[in-house]
Image (tube, rainbow, N blue to C red):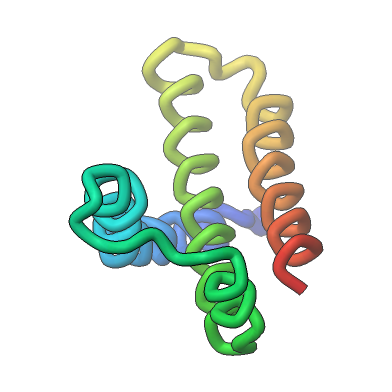
Length: 113
């Protein structure tokens, strides 16, 4: 029987979906509704810099960004393959989608650390 990486990608998909559902709504509410409408005061650059110095927050942000991107990659891959019937380009689509998620994860690590 041929070994498959599908369970690995499905686990990243599930974890990304769960974290996205938990964290992204509150982040969108704060940064795209509450701050622009002056419901809460906009943080200064110094405050944001101090907050981003916390190692545990960097770890959480890296996890949310990374797993959200893997969730997107898996969903987009199967949308292209199943929805648009592009089965013959399965390998190319998988490499592009998951490669984008990996590169985004690496970029978030570089920028945050």
